[in-house]
Length: 207
Image (tube, rainbow, N blue to C red; front, side, top):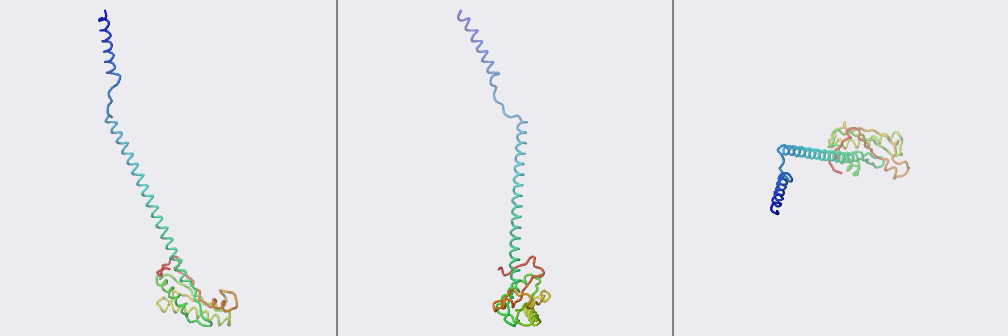
């Protein structure tokens, strides 16, 4: 009786085991060719996107560097122009009732000469002034002689005379409005103005 019950139970167990083995836990399978191709396309697109982003970033860096270089160049040119203009516009002074170029004025004119040589398009105006002593007519003539003296000095070193205009204001435009020797010494002067070619100036002296 026991043997007849055991055999059917064993057969049922084997049947259940066979079913579990066949349908319960199927063996894993690799990606299909279609899935592999799709992944490859996705990887290729991602790589292209990264490359494009890197290219754009490199272009932005290059553009920023270019703009920065241009900014520095403009600033340097502006500093150089300002320095050159300052040299050209530096005043010179004269002794009482004289139009001879003094040694200190000669040094300043030599600096102007260097800048004028480096900037052939630059033109200047020299305005001669006198202190208040003497007649109006005399001081106008004295101011003119002082302006011409500075021009002659520069022309004597090779600057074309057409690049230098002269004018006299005599005693009409004092730099210092006072009646003492200190004021008179400052009012006996030549003033220089850049009248052409002053937008961009080279300063070969570097100061």
